[in-house]
Image 1 (cartoon, helix red, strand yellow):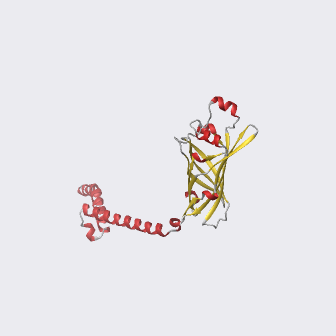
Image 2 (tube, one colour):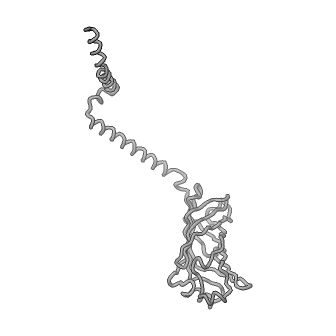
Length: 244
């Protein structure tokens, strides 16, 4: 009877014995000095080592970025108005009226390694519109049409660039004209050799712009008799020189 009672006592004490053994194994796996550290000291040491590792990784990343080819791949080109043209054509009755803007500026940022990171910006002086007829040009500058005193600039800013061929691409951006912003897609083609880096020449096409989209409308009575199409074809050629 005593032997049976003793066995039951041993069995009932097994969980406690196993728990203590587990704690002893955990302590024995630590370095002797670590086993004696208070919990706060151990946490402080771990945090210190973690911060050191993070700082080393940041320094390494900075060094890699500073010497990587992509970091020095950007090329900046500015429009050369003397060799560029921004023109348009619009049908009227049986004929076609051609016009252009004579004053403009622009910038092309080219990333040859990652073309999608390239960008284009352009500004056009709306007052510089020229259709070869002074009376008509003054009318187009008036409040009835472009209203150049209130809206002196036509601005394009790219949002996304996509390479579609070795020397071609699509530029999706925002065109702001007459105080109204619309999304447009420009199809561009590099005319100069792809290895030419000092001067480049591009042809640019896009879907015809609609006058109503920018509220470029005459009075209803004049619109009815003018015979001027709503669609305006855009004709652009840009020559750009690389900035030193």
